[in-house]
Image (cartoon, rainbow, N blue to C red; front, side):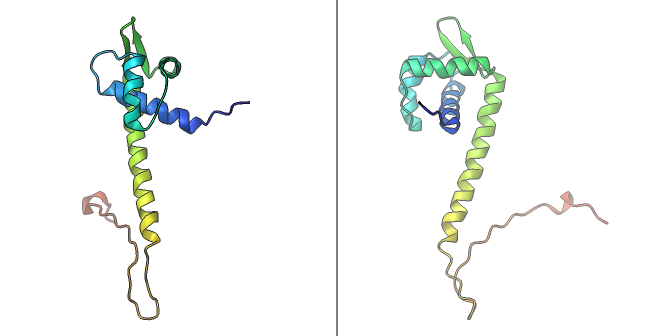
Length: 128
């Protein structure tokens, strides 16, 4: 029995959407399959067509005759939100990496510690 990792499918679909998002013209499965290695993904044309069909059904892409697919507004929103998720994931991974480099010595107060700081404009807070 073959198990399918939903995160892997999602990663492939986002990569395909990113390729479509870069183009103002319809893009076919062959061209997409050639560009996917840029994202660390290797799929056959047939596999790309399978993913495109799934994305058509979800309203993320639309077929334009035999010319290929275009990304829809819903697909563009999916790419935008996926990129935000990737950025947040990158920041979290970076903080975790730095946390292992903590050298704080509590006895004498020396060393390094990771600190995540956020600044908010004063006008965003209500006065009481």
